[in-house]
Image 1: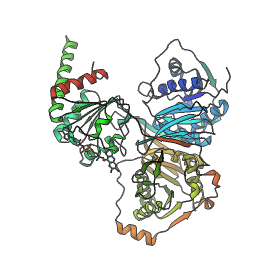
Image 2: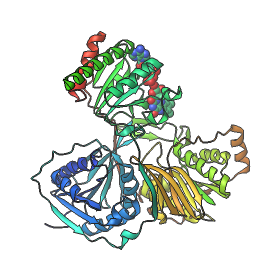
Image 3: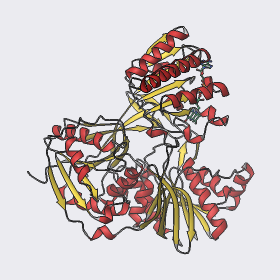
Image 4: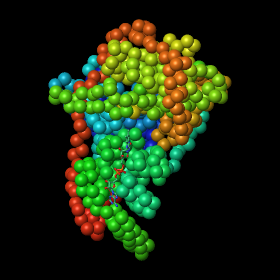
Length: 341
Length: 263
Ligand SMILES: Cc1cc2nc3c(=O)[nH]c(=O)nc-3n(C[C@H](O)[C@H](O)[C@H](O)COP(=O)(O)OP(=O)(O)OC[C@H]3O[C@@H](n4cnc5c(N)ncnc54)[C@H](O)[C@@H]3O)c2cc1C
């Protein structure tokens, strides 16, 4: 196959493989984009002992994989990775290069773009090909999520974007899929890290990363008294989720600052959001728009939150929440008994 | 220790209007403030100065209104300020912005040992300018910093990155991106701002002062082009039900099942 076929590339971030699915999500999207461009989807993998991930990427739809392996690449560090990727991109000239919007991705993609003098849009929530000119239209949130900006990179290459995790759906695992795998020699640049990693530890799931939670119970002023708040916390625990909330709760000192959702807080993208007693102020809803399904509970039928929810329940939290908890506890107890029987 | 803090003047709330069939953004006329994360970077710089001595220089690129933010930051204790302002800079993307900031940093006398910036801005929120400034200057970049220390000619950073806590070290000069952390920026009273206006100076730099050409900045120096703005469509089902509590609970449970939260 031609090498310089203006491929669509994805950065193969395999850290935290089980939970960080953004690479797989991007492969699925890149396949789609590549089809439009009559090209192919490729993954650029840098690292050490990457074979299992290479197999996974193929099973999830990659048509080509460019691999550079070296012990010095075992740790993800932005200077070395920038050097190596710029080298690969100059060799193969992909048309598009997509990077998962992890902290690391958002630190190193800008450096790659800068070095290649090309454009980069950040935290994209939509990507499509403009049929009239073949350009990648990158949709990215602007003004705290109140608007979506559409951005193109008309002249320079590759067209680059970092993409918010959870936006695209990964393809099903296909054991029979195959792909071309190209191993590249690591260059001298693999020595060139200018930042030393002295120590590293994994953080426990302390909720500091509300962005990663797949279920979030979000509390507003309507559920802010100590009893309701405790119950909300309990609900989150029962359902295996995280607690978050609106700004007034942070101001009252009930909620830690890093759990605040919204324009000035976190932007979350859980599979399910349960919003309790939040009126739906713009500054709050800016942070919840990427939730897959939103259940909102509020006693005011005109609360704007209902226009942002998939399922709105008009009712009094004081009556509904305890009842919901009781039912959940009962069913859970029932299940445990069955398990022990 | 010479420290430079990059600081952005962000609109408190930009007015966005639908006008003549297109979105118009009005950043003028609305009150602005220091981008909150840059304020944290400033606080880190001021604390480092307390320990190591030296000087804190502010650097901002933006319209003349950005002077307000610079004056406020001077009042908080920074030593001097430079505002890069030139009509040709309008419409710069991060590539062009980092080019201008790096050019200004190259012109500072003496050069900064440590460049500090916030990790993100509250308006455009790309998080790209810090790493791109470092890249342009050919300096190490240490982002997402919670704590910053200087020992001899090294900078030590404790940072949070993708569920990991990392301790990093680099030789200075270096660029550090500061994250919000429990480190409350100092308060400043109006009197102090007034005094800063009188006693401290803000230098203005235009494109020529930076030695840049118009085609290197602004829309012409940018690789990305904004082609549209639209309102997010939520595509939500928007079913709203008013039910007695026991039925409400049933409906919620059903939704939990459908979303695979419950079996
Ligand atoms: C510059 C700026 C930035 C901001 N950034 C953020 C941000 O990032 N995040 C954020 O959240 N806010 C932010 N805010 C604040 C925001 O504007 C709103 O004030 C806030 O989101 C409202 O919080 P709330 O919905 O909890 O409270 P409210 O608006 O008071 O809503 C409470 C709701 O609870 C309902 N309720 C009360 N009792 C019950 C009951 N017993 N049963 C059922 N329902 C009940 C009420 O009907 C009401 O709808 C910002 C504001 C500004 C000016």
